[in-house]
Image (cartoon, rainbow, N blue to C red; front, side, top):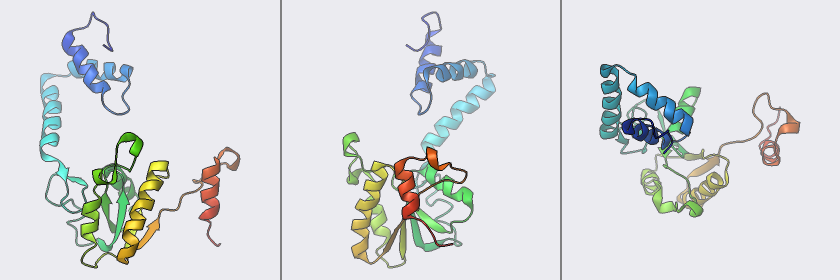
Amino acid sequence: MIMADSNALALTVLAEHFAKLPGIGMKSAQRLAYHVVSMPDSEARAFADAIITAHKTVHECSVCCNLTDKTLCPICGSDRRDRSVICVVESPKDVTAFERTKEYKGVYHVLHGLISPIDNVMPESLRIKQLLARLQDGTVKEVIMATNPTVEGEATAMYLSRMLKPLGVKVTRLAFGLPMGAVLEFADEVTLYKALENRNEI
């Protein structure tokens, strides 16, 4: 139990459910539980309905595997996107991050994870088959590997690169290096190496 035995059982159970969410610790879960039970009935019902509705209606886009409540997500359904370029990302949250830049005009493919044998996540667990299906008609000219610069992200990018290059598709990797405002003495070795490797002429 994450709350004292003196609390109502329903409150304890609610807090335990919040604690199962990513990034929510025990104290935060307890605060959320107290907040929810203090809501007016109408707000509590609306909150519960929103969870149930999202769980029932949100599913993967039939093309890119991003989350949507329609057959196609808004990006795949748009006639303004460049379908010759696919940006491959780990999760739907990464699509949101790229869209905030308002610079990328291509489309996406969401893997829903990264290859990680230690976590029992193998290639067949990811949406790789769906990605390969998108390359069959010759429309796609470039696939951008936009997985995070972690061991799992690099392994996934390399695995996909080996699969895609024989298909005649250009495979590129996001450039990683020093962020704006970074101080060199505090940067780790991998970041500095990537900054050197991805240097540009000025």
